[in-house]
Image (cartoon, one colour):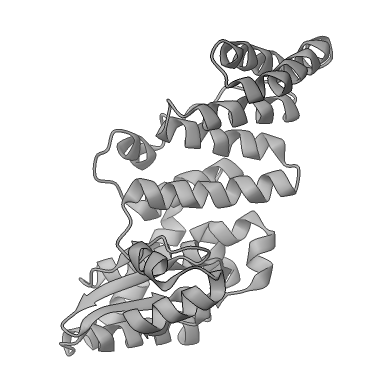
Length: 278
């Protein structure tokens, strides 16, 4: 079975790897193309263009970021009926912008990306915030930072309200929450997006899809032992036995002692499976 992974046509993911400026919407669509190989980005990008056309006149008459965020939330959540849902957590579709727009349902990070893209096209800068358990976006205003929760119909929160809510949600100390409420860089956002997908695919035993995701995670951090180990273990479950054996042999040269038995056992399994799957 073919285990080769090639991201060369993913222009914006390649920019991310090279630590150059990239468009996170296009990175998301490039990742979505792993699941939908024939995906045409134009329809999704046209949807964003239409939101800019709808809202630009409203935005021109406003001088307050708070007002602009309120209008943005009403447009996306009320007029276009796009918000969070528990069912979006049970499918990979909840992570992909093309499917979020089509279904009207998403998870916090994909909805945040959607808000960020529309806002950017309207000249409003909002930042992704990789807060624990629940991704948000924030805007700097004269009165201080304002946080928007795309999952909850574009609800707006002050910093104090966001800290209180996340502290109750996560049971973490308020000081710890406060430290997390800062703009996240592009690599942090994409890594969190990919980790969500890996968790979903592993939970549904879709190992070939998890393999593609794990290759992206490793590309973002090639020296990370944990990502290399997970790639080898996923390769075996995806029935890429020869690839798994090669990766496991490489890991065994320098793995921590506590992983050695696990990796040896997995290597034995991979070598037994090579005649069957390769």
